[in-house]
Image 1 (cartoon, one colour):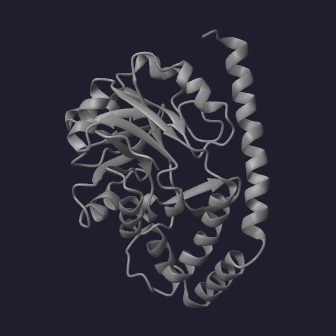
Image 2 (image 1 turned 90 degrees about the vertical axis):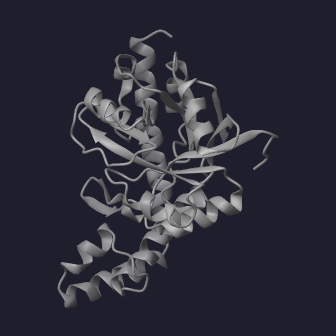
Length: 294
């Protein structure tokens, strides 16, 4: 990662093991198994000036990470509103989910926070879509490195009129941090906030390689095993769920986690998933081009 003089680099969209669970069809799995301390270490090694922890509907991961480097970490939250996901940065308190998009943004601004729309035209994540034009958003994520399709980011960029252009990795594994980033003048958290408010930002990065997704699958299996064995000492949604499982079933869960981590399944799931998600994103692209002109 090359840093120009007086140019700050921020990853404005990352997750930790506090993000809870994701679902696909009948499958439910940990959204991320990254320990907050690991996120901090990776960001420091990469030379990031600012790292925003934006777990789903909680700020617990960000608060934990901030203990290790308060100058690096911005407290954020990816909030599930009734109109799609909205990210708030520079928060002091969590914003509850299931509010309207307008009310969610109001709650963020009441804290002097910054509100932006992540992956607004995603084919597989819940984005706000064209509702963004009626919302009082400060920024738009026009480069989300997790979206490998090449379509959703282009649509977001074409709709980014009057918003700060932001880039984020949407990292669900520590190896993904910094794949997407936001550039701003300065290096501090306040300078990032000012740059977003004044729409003086740009973005860059690379599309997340397939290996990072394979690594993510392996880490899910491996780190889940550590939680079952209580080796990491972290109280997170995964550990809360494990604590409710009776001991004989914990052993089955442990065996399944090990088998998944050290089998070809992460590779197979990644290749199949990449193909399915690209197909979904192409459909969104075709629908947008058929019904709208830019």
